[in-house]
Image (cartoon, rainbow, N blue to C red; front, side, top):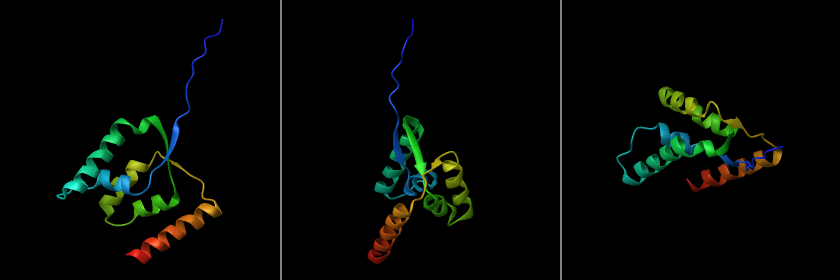
Length: 105
């Protein structure tokens, strides 16, 4: 006799740089930013294990930038997350998004 258990596949979630930045930063005095930090920390502590998390080389690079101590905290947070392969299409899409973002700023 065989017993089968149905284990639904985890959903994949792409973690962009904002999440590790919010989680590892000092608590903001701005209420909206502090709220975003709290929600991000709650997700990280209680929900992230329900998903297959992925980052890209761009997230790693952005987490490495800035204040040395802050960068260490961000990199420690993302160290066990799998990398999503960078395809030419994905690379072009990210470059396009960054170009648009820079034009807005």
